[in-house]
Length: 246
Image (tube, rainbow, N blue to C red):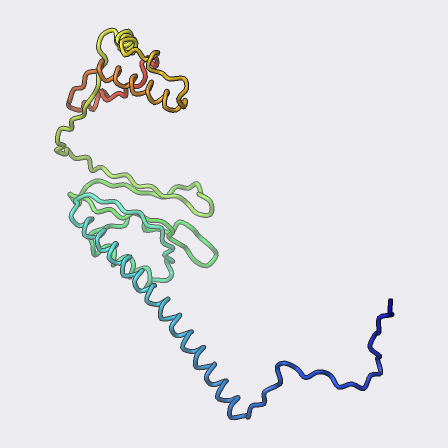
């Protein structure tokens, strides 16, 4: 075996040429490349922000439409109670007045007018109730609890606006077991000759489905259905399940 030859460190052979030789460009070409990159980055950023702004605009349009629908619904109804969680700083009067005027202009009167959280420099009204009642002189009472909830005090409102409403009669369909329900269901299953219809060579799921169908037929044949008026003092609607559950 011949010994393996290793290259000498002091060899004077020239290195092999690189497969990717360097490319030399002028300063004008470099400026053009930089300008093109900056232009492309600017266009990409503008397109990205345009898409985000359009999506945000569409989102707020939908939100405004939902709020307008809620306001129209509230204007049609005589009695309405809305609860808002808004940090309205009492000292920031322009913001507070703008918000309060926009709510009161739609017929909603605030029930809480005092701040519910205090610091060394300001008072904050965190939550509020806005009531629109018919008649407008309906008796209401609101207050602020002395016990703090987390970092602020809680509030409550009571409204004396009970009215008689015309409610149409509502009907439901109820089922009623016949006399000797369990015995008749068992007799129905025996008459169906279920034991001889079960094939033990079939899958267990098919035999169970056959038994379930026979049982449901027996229950349906021994129950009576009737359409009755709903009684608010007695719940007549009852679910009848398997016979051994009684």
